Image (cartoon, rainbow, N blue to C red; front, side, top):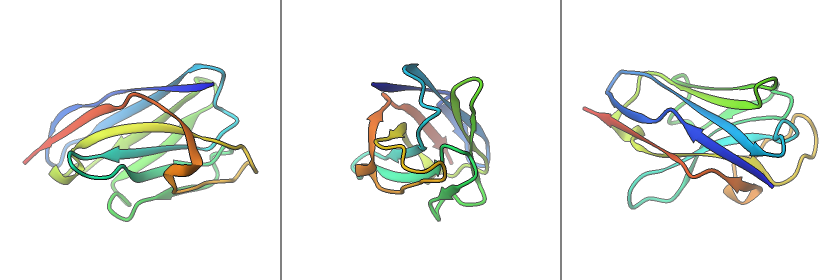
Length: 128
């Protein structure tokens, strides 16, 4: 079972930056597409970004496009989310997740249901 472990959250002022990391605990997840989701208080967990197993295909939610960057380091078995120009509405718990299935090397999904291994989350708070 793939078990992502997130880190890098914290408190930052609006306009600032944070970099989240997601490392695996257990079997490697270099064989899977990886995604970041987030959940604000009282809201549903929502898609943020996804990167394919190959790293060639990437998708972002419209709300974070041009501000967030997802990447993966296969040697370190780690996925990153660089978050720039942060806004108060980015405040949430951020979760890393591995796809349930490998499919093709360029497979990506934006759906929670397609991800089966979730981390514990890391809190991001953006003050205005």
